[in-house]
Length: 90
Image (cartoon, rainbow, N blue to C red; front, side, top):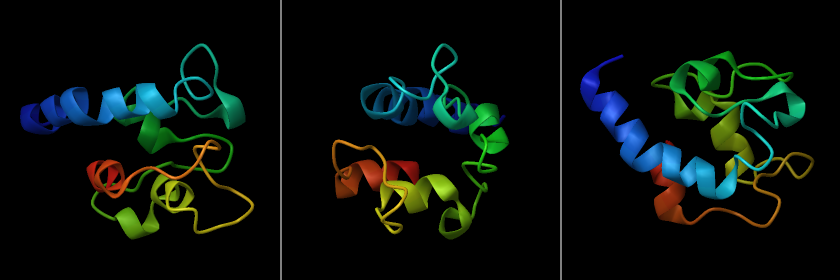
């Protein structure tokens, strides 16, 4: 992985995922078969397929579920992320 992308993941993305997602989607608890602890795990995804499609946020399931686009699949369950947090993941 590109060092700049890796640094962005570690500084911006991982802390956001830890705060909002790791309770259910980590190596120790992977609801739906989804582990969000690394870029590779995000690309691999879970039972519903890849969580992200690099460079294509509109095609990424993660972006759809955090955007509350599907009323049957909305994450995190406590409520939508802020616009800033969503932009980080996009």
